Length: 202
Image 1: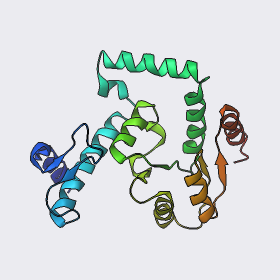
Image 2: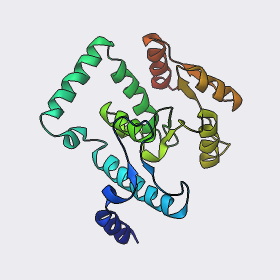
Image 3: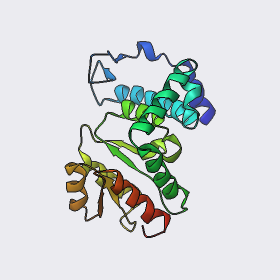
Image 4: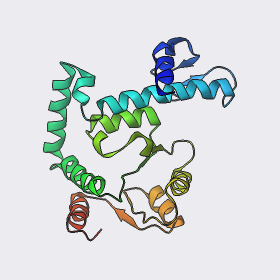
């Protein structure tokens, strides 16, 4: 079954399937025909499988995806971001790595960014190693509360959920779900989160 799907994806022509992604179009991957119909869903499934294949292939090797000289430009940009933000990304990554290293814990990302740009951001920020693609949710069209409900239906109600974020929408959604919310407003909030995780308080 896996080999058949892989072969179908390899032979699938993404350029002629009716989807388009104009650079100035905010609605990425819209297709002609009946949105939500069987054929539309099949085409969308092929696209998701291809994205998953690329994501999983390069989640720990973004430089390989970018190639030279873009790899060097990306590394320089990452270095400049770290310098200007007092290693904000490194500290966030350390916190996420602590969570993902625990046998009974998982990182889940809920973002208002559309899925394809969100996956690109995760890879470019070097976070692919701590987020499985199945654990990245786009709340663009359904909102964060609906995403949280989907997460509960997937992982169950007996889990302990902690929401980490800086926005009112995720704080409001976490309150609706009765989940604790850890606000990250500045560098010290992030450092406190890392400290709590490192010492096992969280």
